[in-house]
Image 1 (cartoon, rainbow, N blue to C red):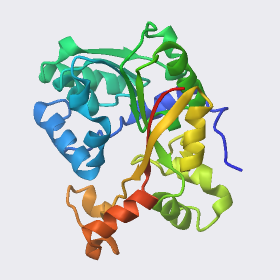
Image 2 (image 1 turned 135 degrees about the vertical axis):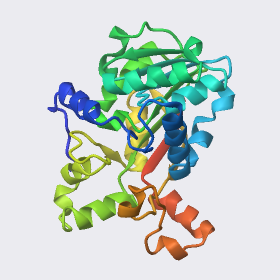
Image 3 (image 1 turned 180 degrees about the vertical axis):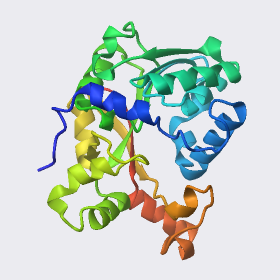
Length: 280
C-alpha cells in the first residue's frame, strides 16, 4: 500500500521550497544575475535534455500557456521566448521573486504573468479561462492532494482543444531503487517516506508521491483527462561529490554504457514519467 501525504499542511510544503527553490544551486554565479540564469538553464537542460522536446516550446507561439509550478522560471522564459502568453504560478514566493527578476532581465515581462498560488485552490488565485496548454513539470507530486490540482485544471482551465503536459516521478525507477537500497537499507515497506525525504537535492521534502505508468495514467483519467502519450525518461548518471563542484564524472555502470543502451534504460527505469493528455 502506498503512503499518502494528505495530512501534511500546504504551509509545510511552501516553507520547504522557500528555503531552497528548485535548481537554486545550478550555478555558482551571483544569484539573480544574467550569468546565473544562463548557467542555471544550461545545466538544467544538460542534465535533463528531454525537457525541451516534452515542452515543445515553439508549438505554443501566440498560444496561452498556464504553468503550474514555475520555480525559477527556466521553462517559463522559454515559453515566452517562443512567443507564448504565459501565466506562471508557484507556491514559493522565493521562487517567484527570482522568476520575475529573470523575466525582467530577458525582457519578456510583457508575455508572462506570475501568480503566487496554492494550485489545489487555483481558481481562487487565477481567473478561470481556457488555456491552450497547461504545463507542470515535476510539481503536482509535491502537493498533498495532486488530484485536487488536476480537478481544478479540468474544471476551470482546460476545454476542448486544450493540452495537458505533466511530469510526475516514476515509482519503478533507478532512483527509487537507489534510495531504497542506500537510505532505507532495503526496507521496501519504508519506501514512500524515505523516497520523499530524499527525492530532491535538499533532503527532507515533506511530500513526494511516485507513480507507475498505470497509476499515473489512472490519476489523470480519474480527474477527467484522457492520456494520449506517456514516456519514462531521465537517469542521473553523475557522481554527486563531483556534480556539486560542477564537474561531470559518470558513475559505474553508466561510464561505459553505450548511448543507445543508456537511452533504452532511461525509457524503462527513468525518474520522470512524462504524460500528455487532453480533456476526456
